[in-house]
Image (tube, rainbow, N blue to C red):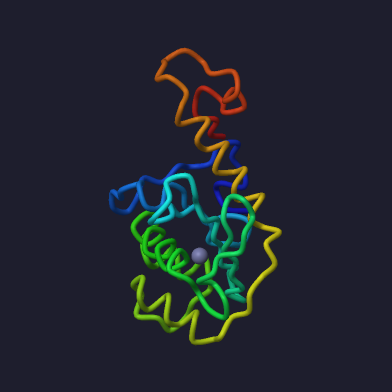
Length: 165
Ligand SMILES: [Zn+2]
């Protein structure tokens, strides 16, 4: 078992490099996918929920209203491209490549992108989008909590001190 599997706390990694949140407010490596939320360039009411599966690179992109993204027919759209770029800022290229199982890339965002598109990945159904979007909303809810040093009931399952054996 790795450290995090035997501990009751997950280590939160600081971003590899600071990144702006306006374009891609949410990106994570979770559920076997690189997934996140990308702002629409033209409409502030609209966001795209995009994901790429580790290993198969199966991709999906749709709006928060569950409309398919016009750019994601046949290959990665600009939103997925933006997601990869921001994930590399957030996690570092090596970690993103390892998670997605991209090999042979001279790791940077561009090479990770081209290795994946080079395999002509297929399009996934949009089932993941709802799940990704609800994770984003939950993430936002924590961002909106006022700063406090008092215990936050919702976060109480995090032990107050390090529980190291
Ligand atoms: Zn898209």
